[in-house]
Length: 270
Image 1 (tube, rainbow, N blue to C red):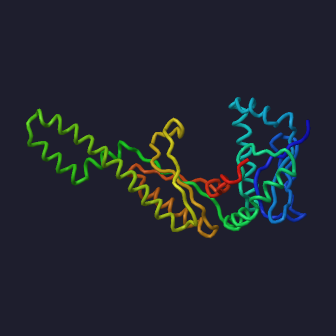
Image 2 (image 1 turned 90 degrees about the horizontal axis):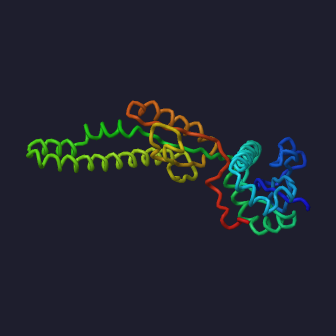
Image 3 (image 1 turned 180 degrees about the vertical axis):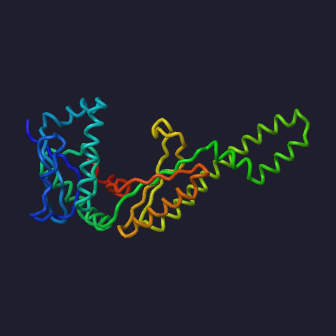
């Protein structure tokens, strides 16, 4: 069996004095290097086909511990590469049979990638997650929402039989108002942060089993920020935490990350 090429990402053309040889590849033996093409370069490492061939990977990816370990390496390596250069990150285990097959793929998408690299230059991806203590918010909505207060007063004047049914309907109304408040408040803050970014995307929220937090995640989004806007963006999040913590809101920002959410690889997947 021969060698395969493991692709980490696409970067601008690299000069001879630019080296990634201090970074170890996914096999934990060989090092990373760049292959220059006409208008961009690929950051790769060589791997043995006997270890990373298609059929071998089908078996290895059934082992979740192996996947977790190698996917973490891939992610950490992309972070290190992003610190050195603009990079279009590739998916975990993007592998080519030869340098020729890699070159054919690059030549097909090179113009799009050059444009994308220009767009990503001097920008960082930052992620925002908003959490809320739903029970605390529910209490505040039930206490301060005018429609609910009026409904409570109306119920007080009803017979006991009617009160039972109407209170169940009132609980449902409170839940609906809480949901509206969660979405309205979170979207409003997201829209405020858009002023700092070139691009943004709203992602799927995670449940408590995934987050491990007591609070509920009610918003999950990513922003592509010019470097000069990062400080202002982070200050807005800090201010929001200080101002709304008493109401049960928590704002969590992480980054900078490779631009995972701002590269469309659907046309170049292999």
